[in-house]
Length: 590
Image 1 (cartoon, rainbow, N blue to C red):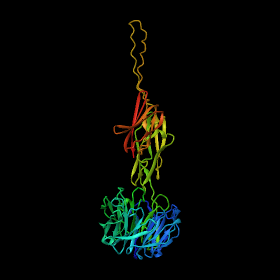
Image 2: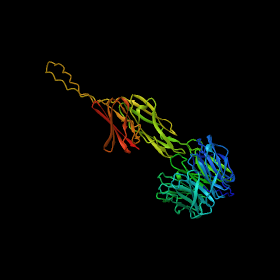
Image 3: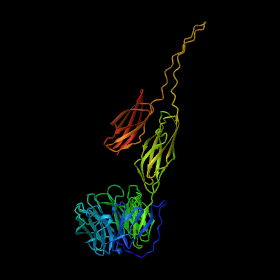
Image 4: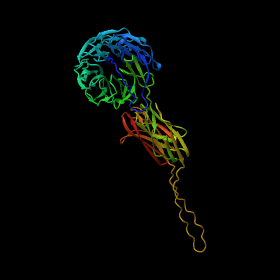
């Protein structure tokens, strides 16, 4: 995080660039003098986020203890220096309480305030740290299990590191060259070797320097990445979920945001720059739309720019006239990440509530099956559900309920356990097996953080099908001519037609996936009692088998799931009175 430089200017408010409900809504301000960097952590262990703000005009760092309902106490000021520009949080002495580390460009040092009981902090201990230390970060840079401190200088070419002793004190300063003066720094394991590397924003040279760590806290000369006109802020995060961190860079001259995609081995592929809507002063990464992927939150000249999943056109949310630095936290415990930004020109810390909400819409209000004879199974009807709100939908279960719920079998389900992103969909497949004649009605519910209205399931149970007519008996012997003979005897009855009331069995597949080394519950329906065998096959091999004497109606048995993950086939075979019925379903072991 970098220092604040004010300039008198006139700016216009920016309106959201995309239609639909807003994600971020202004939610009040906190008073401040000259706020720059802001960080969030639970300093007093009450479960509510607290804030620490670098506030040079107030003499150092202002601490705001948070409470329920996004309310904050009056700030407590820690005297860390009149040039305090940046603040970071780390547990330097391993006592479980967050400590504060801040950089002071006037004193050319960093101040350490050790955290105590109830969100209190001790007096500052200062350590010389280069010339004009403009931004500070923390991390275990030498792999000894304790937190260390690193800064970059505004007027020199130094990356300065002090290694923590584990008791809250810092060791001697070690410096490494950044080639040009840097405005910001961030740490991540770029080359996947288990230690933290550092990237620095070399604003004057229009580049970002990636400095690899040898594991002992020694940083190599920077590898330069061309990053626009005046790269002033940066952050690391895995935007695409491949395990390699991406580097996000903001330009406070052109207003561009650049993403450098990590491809392993300390290499990056740059994406095209995106104009965020104004000078970019700070960037942060957080999952604001709850789809499991990080979004980019950028503090631009007059508001907050949001790039969902780190790509595409930004959505702009107007704020004050000089939004400077930004961080994120769930301020109201609603499960959604909110945004906090500083505005030194108007002397406030601004709060933005995340009001995004999930919406799940079904493609039809009813699944109608028509008339289905008893002891038979209908074809499949498919219901599609689409996420169409401002954030992803988390689905926990699919259930049938109502008086005739047992007549409807969920035979396919990609919804349960899914996180459906905005614009994405899942499906539920249902079959009808009536157990009585007449109207058979039930409902289906998709349950989660945004369920759809109950879907009506309707069908009619028809009469049993009639077997074919028996063969006609043979004609009687004709009597002799003259005297009329006695009437011929009636021929024997023909063999009975095949009985169509035969065993019907169907896998309910209420659960078609299971974890390795667990058991899967298999549900099925029979209309005649008999012996049922359920086999689990992997290719041509049978890896598990169980049998039971099934009763009429819905039955359940538990089948042991193999350790090997993959797709398997459930084969159900039912036998009674010489008749056989089979059904199949898929089971995925994850």
